[in-house]
Length: 328
Image (cartoon, rainbow, N blue to C red; front, side):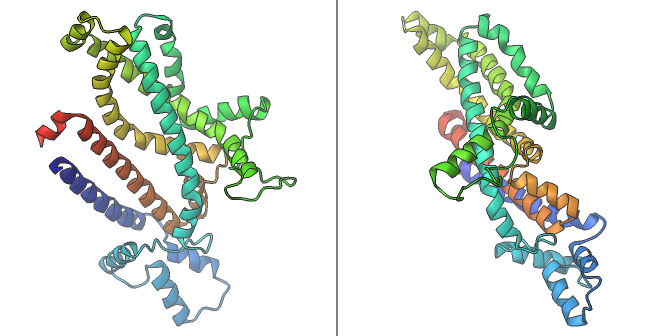
C-alpha cells in the first residue's frame, strides 16, 4: 500500500508538471487563441465590452501571465478546458465526442497486441530454435516502419485495392447509408468494420516488441534453478512453461507502462491517415486552424490518460511481485 501511495504522489506531481508545461508552452508559440478569434471577427464592429468578454473567455489581453495561469488552473479544477476557436464549442464537448473513438481504438489494439505478443513470446521462448523462432524477424519489420507509412500501406493494400475493409471514417456516412448512431447492430457492425484497419495497423506496429521481449525473458527464465527443479519433478512440459511464464511476465507488465505512450502516439497518427473521428483527427484539425484551446485540451487528456494507464500497470506490478512490496 505504501508503494502505491508513493507512486500515486509521483503521478500527481507529474500531472501538475504537465498542466504547467501545457500552459506555458502554448504562450511561447506565436499567436494566441484571442488573436485567432479577433482575426475572424475583423469585419465585426466590436466594442470594448465585447472585447473584454472575449478576453475573459479565451485569456490574454492585459492580464499578467501569473493571473492567466491561476485562472487557467481554476478553470481546470472546474472541468473547464476552454472554448474551441475553430468549432465555437466547449473543448470538453469536442473531447467527449472524439475520446471514445480513440479509447476504443487504443484499448482494442493494445489488448490484442499484448495478448498475442505475450502468448506468442511464451510459445516461441518455450519452443526455442523452432519454426516460429525463425519467423520472428518478419514481425520486427512492421515495428521498424513508421506508423504513418504502415497505416498508408495497410490502407492501400487491404482497403483501397483489396476492398476487404472500409478505409475512411469511423462508420459508414455514405449517401446511401441508413445508420442510426447508438448501440444497435448495424451501427456497431459498421464501427467494427471501419476500425479493423486502424486496429490492425497499431497491432502490427507494436506486436514485435511484445513477442521479442517475452521470448527473451522466457529463454532466460527457463534456465533458472526453480524451473529446472519443476522439470526434474516430472511436471508436464506445459506446466513447466507456465511456471516460467508467471515470473517472466512481470517485466512485460512494466514494459506495458512504458510502451503505452508510444501506442497512444502511434494511434493518433493512424487516425489522421484513416480519417478516424478520434482525438488524433481533432489534433490534425486544431493544428490546421491554429486552435490553441483545443490543442491544449487534447494534450492534457492524452497526458493524463497515459499517466492513468501507467498507474494501473504499477498497481498490477506491485500486486503480482512480492519483491516490489518489500522494497517499499
